[in-house]
Every structure is written in C-alpha cells, then in structure tokens.
Image 1 (cartoon, rainbow, N blue to C red):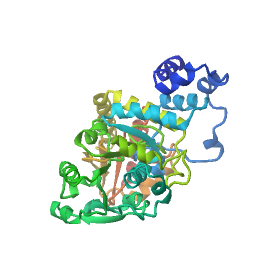
Image 2 (cartoon, helix red, strand yellow):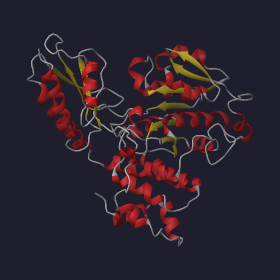
Image 3 (cartoon, rainbow, N blue to C red):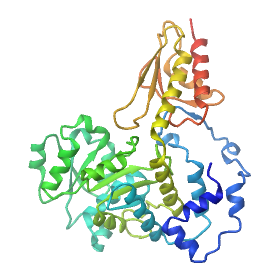
Image 4 (spheres, helix red, strand yellow):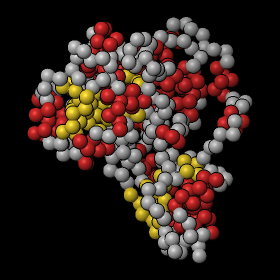
Length: 407
C-alpha cells in the first residue's frame, strides 16, 4: 500500500503537480485528514444501496472496476488544489502519449467520448466555424467507412457528429466506397475476427487514400501491449476505456494518436463551450487518476496477475466439480475482456435449478454476488474484479446452492 509520503513524491514527478506545488501554492491543511482517515459516513449503506461481490466483469451497469488506493489518493490529493484544466490535459497527455507510443493523447469522458471527439477533430480540424456548427456538416466531409460486421451500436458515437455510416465487407468495397465525402475509416477491435479486412490492411487502405483510421479497443486490455500495439501499427486514432481492466475512473477514457487530430479534437472538448463535446467534461481529479491507473497498470507484473486469476478460477472449479452432473470449462475470450472465464453447467434433471434462479439466489445472499449467464442451466464467472479471498466466498455460495438443489 502506497504511503502518503510516497504518493506525494511520485506525484511530484508529474510536470503539472511539480509546477503547481513548486510555484509555492500551499497544500490544504485538511489534506492529512482527507488521505489518512476513514470516511465518517458510508452513504452506500446509509441509502440502502446494494453492494456485491463482482464475479461478472467490468460491465458499465455494474460500475465497471474498483480503483486502487493509489488512484483514489491521487484523486483526493488533486482535489485539494486548483489548476487550469487545459494544463492538466497538456501535461498528462504528454505522459500518456509517451507510455503508449503515440504522438499525443488526451483523457476523455470514456471511450465513447474519445470516439466523438476524435471524429470531431477529423471533421473540423482547427476551424472554429466548423467546430461550432457540428453536427451540421455543411462544408465538411460526411461519411465514415465501417465493415458490416463492425456496424453495431457503438457507431452511434460517430453518428453523433452528423456523419453517415458506409458499410463495406471487402477491400474492393472500400475502394468503391472512398470518395470526396469520406472523412474516416473506423475499426471495432472486438469484431475483428468477424470482419473480412484485418487491422493491417485497414490501416494500409487508409494511408493509400489519405483517410484517417480510428480503432475502438474499449475493453481490449489485457494484454497490456494493446495500449501501444495499434499506435505502432499506424492507426491515426486509438480509443480505450479507462475504468475496466486498468481500474481508472469509470467515467474516463483515452484518445491517442496523431498530434494534429488530438489538438483539433480538444477544441470540441471542455472547457470550451458551444461545441459538440461540451457535455463530455472530465475533471482534473479524473485526468490525474486516469494517468495514475495507466502507469500502475503498465508497470504491474502481468504474468503474476494472470497466474492469480487462473488460481482463483481453479479454486471455484474444484469447489463444484464433484457435485453430481456439474461440469466446468475454462475459456479465454480472444479479444475483449481477455481474461479466464469459468463456465459451470449442470443437468436440470439432477439439479432442479434454472440459471436465473441460481443468479437470484446468489444476488439475494449475504454477501450479494453477481455472475453472468448466456445459456440455460449454466453460469459463467470472471475473477479479475474479485478482491482478495472473494473467490472463496463465490466458490462456497455456488457450491451451497447447487448442492441444495440436488434431487
């Protein structure tokens, strides 16, 4: 656990914090109490808000991930000082860009915001008139090329800017679709296996026609290398969520890529008003917290973390494997949420329990537990959001309910 003294030392290496503190601004006299004392009120408990053990994953509806203490301390500490929002973005963006092999970067209000602002930057450049008129595209390019298999709900982030989505399937389709209205080519990373054009060919097509390419890789770390893989590959813009496996603020994301586009994108973002991104505000606490989370994530022992996930999955599997008719299977999604999953299934003639009934029993138990399910008579769990020793609670509760339902 990082101490307050170590935290202050680490933060002092950031250009922004060093500049603010070095300029002679006093640290708040309440800082010690803020960082060192436990909260005096538990509003979650006070308001009767259900909390739970998260064996489901980083779903937005389940508030994604829990921020490490170091991230929370960064948020609290930065909340005791004033700073200019653009300077915070400048200094943090420089650090993120260096870590992720990008020309530039900025913290956004989630991955969705990164896509909206990134495309806005492509459409308007630094033209103030164009920036103020979005989503009215008069005088601007108006089409974004997307593979048919990638054309899912997340394209609404793009159409917020007023563009029209042009579906393609093959390289030949792209060649036919490109015209003087084409603004950008968008790639949805988790749909890559279902598309007919791979990453490298997509980037090559964009460069051939001088059209910027953007990739949405919202939940696609781990592996950690993905944070720079697509910048190195040549995508002009890379968008990622901050509050999933990296465990930054759930409301934060990162837009990184070409410097000229990032600079243009920021002209549609707060603190500027009268822009399409005015409502996509990210405060200094989230920006600095996002940087701390990113730095910690990159520097952690990923092999050790993966082994811990496998050990937790194995613990749960062993707890239920000897129950009559129960079968377990471990799998790892190839791209999004690339972590070990455990599927637990059973014969409904032997265990009189439907998947929804088991989910509800786990949800209503003490402690409450959330799992996921896509098929009848089975549930799936993930462990990468579990806190220390919670895998034992999950294993015990699933075992209890399955045994209780045996015929």
